[in-house]
Image (cartoon, rainbow, N blue to C red; front, side, top):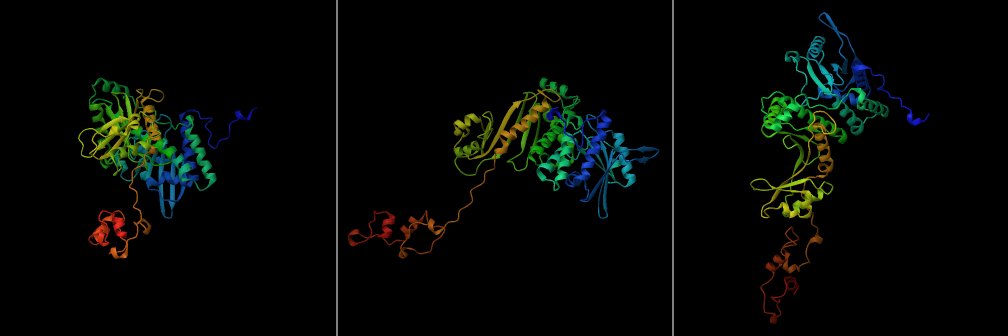
Length: 476
């Protein structure tokens, strides 16, 4: 028998998973066991929720009484450091299973009675805004106990970033974390990616195209929230490959009140048929803005970049074009001049490469900024795969960053150079020098020498020739 057909033994096997219950139990046990074994990974997941940097213990299916019932939360996490102890109950869902309000409220009651700090939920549901919980519960139950949520996508992203980029001190623990990553990436693990725009997607999409959509229509808010969730999934996926904290861009007001963001998306979708958002990638020149135009059937990714503050207009254009040498020729470049009215000049990159002056509409005005964008066809289906909206957005974001954005750098002025004695002009006779070498010597030395020399005399009397060059007169 050929060795190529042999299956390598895995610490966390995917074989033998029979049904959703077994899938959920295995995912819970695997995650909690690795959290307690790999200190850096466990710390990364619990630190944002207020857990101390101490010894982490994990348990599964711990029984608790609640009234006349006996409930079994999927897991329990305890972190202790000195006298401080942080404890959280864990509820896990895999596949398409969703968290239930009644179940979470029961666990919140148990946590309050036991003096625990939090209830942590893990599922494939991705909230539109980080920190927001996908399940609504009675807020009175949150007075003494906090409710937190992790998506499996976020768990996987955190695991990859910790192993591949931040690092694990112990090689054996790094291997253990790698086994968890392999398990979560397997289709049978139940840790699914974002794969559905919701039941209202088709209805809202068709209404936008027909021009009949109104902000109060049923399902518009759900589509808007799903789009924000898609942007968050795109951020986590891109950040997992880059090893960086990629996050959606939201204002402070939107973070404090997520309904403001949803209302803004709904209004834009109803008025112009567009869904728009932005993601922030550390170290880049600006935010990556994503616009899905449901009427035109296109997805546009763009970024704004400041132009250099010196040089001619065409020099500034060439500065940008040099950075786009690997970009597709279909990239759109827009130039904006200072104090100019209306839209700036816009051309395709292939035309700008041939003639940079094509973006300079008025040579007397200073170019202040550029916009670089690329537009791709938009899928219309609600799920995943070829011709779907989700895949078209993900491909647009990944492609724009890989082909354009990662090569763009912000302009910075050259640092001033220190001048040395060798930078000065030819030496001047002491009789004509009133001061030592100064910062004004060099370019204007001729003028200073001319001002310092005596009044010209007749050449016949042995004086300097008035028509001779300044340098020659100085040496006469």
